[in-house]
Image (cartoon, rainbow, N blue to C red; front, top):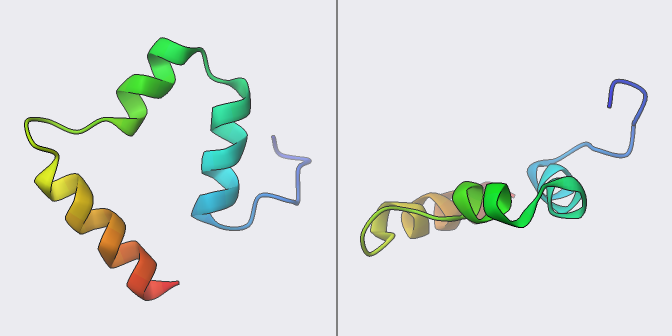
Length: 50
């Protein structure tokens, strides 16, 4: 990872994680609790900053 200069933003890291993580780990990472309300708010906030 330290030699990979192509990972420069959150989206890059997320795509890389999708390509290497086992499904159960990726599912945990991508999920939120309950109705995932806060998860949605966080994603919206990051999109506004991009």
